[in-house]
Length: 440
Ligand SMILES: [Zn+2]
Image (cartoon, rainbow, N blue to C red; front, top):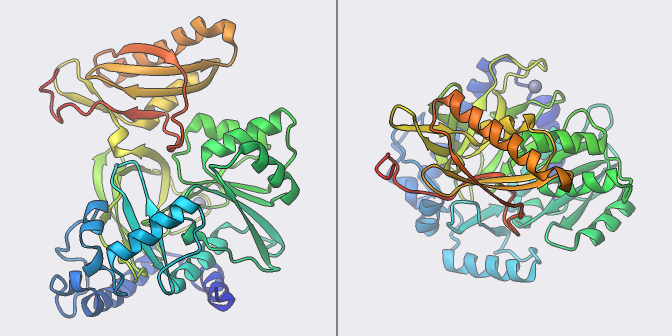
């Protein structure tokens, strides 16, 4: 990797490209978008006929999702990589868990996601370097930027995060699938100053800290790759003895948001454009256009996550949109019958918030398995109190339903079982039923 490009991007993001007003943010977005559309028209066979000459905005460009990205992979990408070749390399890498092989100067990766489709991602070297520079600019603490040791726990997509180690900053990669006891031992030796991992891994480390099985003390902890639930956030913060658990909202579709020193998520609107599909009460599904990603363009990509905008401005004064919470996957919004007919959408975040009030819950997972049936996997902090904890959880879920005007759900309690290798999802809707109320 070229250190120079990383350093240039780092400096530009951190010091030169200070966007102090909303006007400045939008001016930059308009400039990048015009340039990007010109590029796509020239270089992407998929977009050539869709973008008129001299286009200044996204106009009538269609939405994109993983299925479209896969179906049009060959015409979409601007570097002439074929889907079959890329898929072969990506699958081999996944099998060997060695992600260094790419195609030419491009890295390829698979994303499983939660939607069931298999996605194939393609990133150029220049894009990876720019990514590394901008992530570092947004994560290294103010004051000291040299000498950090960054530990990253990753599942897949490792090619996106190729090592940029140097004397200034060192990186160590940990396989989140590997044996956790060995990971902890290595982590202890490495003594990271910054730790980046999915919440499920951070919970394991926080627990190890509480039981004295490790003594790592990173200055900053970042949650990535999974929704950070309120209760988990508190447990992780307490375990690490930190006031703020930071977040990087990064998926294969792009680096979408990061937390400021106050712990507030801000959209990375210096490099992406976020359109909104509104869901009411400040909630929306983001539709993302990456204004700088060229090898595999991400244009009007509908993410399927539910975000909630923060109502009051963040004290950090940033002109980038502040997000109160990432509330989970759109498909995991529970749908309960309304008492007076119709459907109430119960956002995952509302469920996890309501469970904050139930005492003695160690672990939980709530899955909607029928039109009004919730399966509740529960582990009590103290086995002898299991009945009481069940009653407390039932009470909170019932009062949540009452508050939202929904029919009270039938609760089926089962022992808590983590869902294996997939991402930690505490609230999930498995029942698909009808989108309307035909089955109720
Ligand atoms: Zn802020």
